[in-house]
Amino acid sequence: MNSLRKYLIVLGAVFVTAASGAFAQQITKFAVVDTARVYQAYYRDSAPVRNYESKKAEFQKEINKLVSEIQGLHDKKLEYQRAGKDSDALKVEQQITKKTEYLNEYTYAKNMELKSLEKSLQNNNEFYKNLYSTLERVAEIGGYSMILSLQQNNAILWYSSSVDVTDEVISRLGISGE
Image (cartoon, rainbow, N blue to C red; front, side):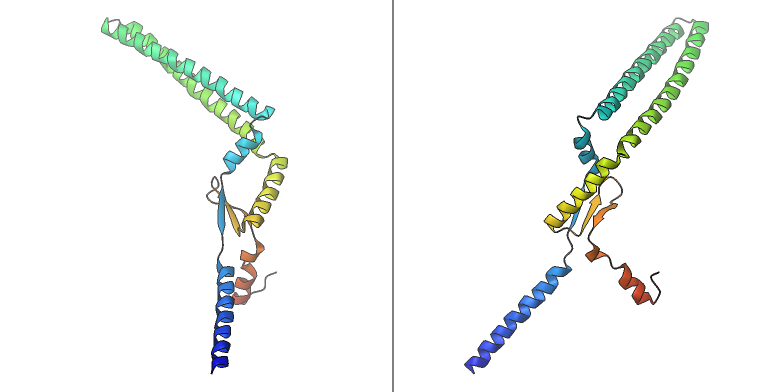
């Protein structure tokens, strides 16, 4: 009876160990990465990023100047209206309209220029090759099955083939995977 008891205890321990191993394999670890922060840290000291930031500051300075001029014209128009100088107020109103249109066009053009510069920075293949190989190393070391991007609506940046069930789904649907 004593040996049967030992046998059952050992068998139970083996069963628990096997079940916990199977359960551990079912756990999938996910990670997220803020690619914008990684990108910014990677290129912080590069000439193209400094150029982008310089242009951005220059454009903002010009926009602030134009907005200030428009505000000054609004103040001038109010003074003319209070003084009953309607024809002068009308002339200032025309200046306000022209400056506002120019500001809108300037802002649109400069935003397009900045977006183009930003896109060319983001399309740097060297950076992305390095990023993806680093993501793979981080995932393997950390035991992650998948790494998602915070910027791209949780787009998958890297995943382990162990979580890809495509072939099984195709097989269970009874269709050819070719």
